[in-house]
Image 1 (cartoon, one colour):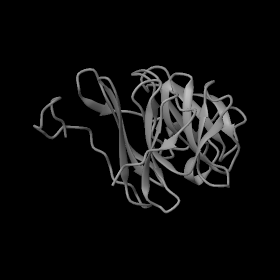
Image 2 (image 1 turned 135 degrees about the vertical axis):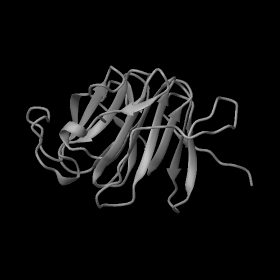
Image 3 (image 1 turned 120 degrees about the vertical axis):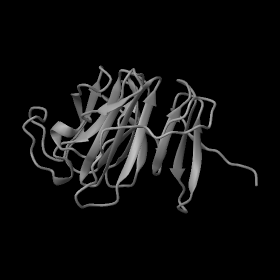
Length: 218
């Protein structure tokens, strides 16, 4: 569906078909937008089943998502601008099978940072983030060299920040974070899960170095 800005007049958008998954969990989908550019992926725990890209003419066209060539795991890219996309790919995906197009020496199940500088037409592996095991996912990239990841190496989910394009990272928030967005390079908001299992808002005003839970008066 689409609607003009500052309006509430929605109409159905014609897109290439997005096939349903063959088995696995319930299908989910995500849309990422930057300016007039956009990217869509849908899939489940078996991998991505459909993906589209929004072109300059406002049309959704077929698109090959970032991890297709190394395992096809369900990955939503994050965007620092309309041309630069970042994603974390698990080599081999859910089935952890070796891939002939994986980076040289990459072990099945290892996690690699993949970057595109041409609006998602091509992705290339930049560096290994971790060996086999654990869980990694990119959540935000407010500037080209600043990345925020959700990861779990066995002690629970944590939000980590890298200021040097993934070479080094440190924990900035403990707990599951399901959403992260920066309104500028300094101020950001996120949705996290509290210890009691409820959703709570977290905020930063120092470019993501420190996060605090936003409390609302009842």
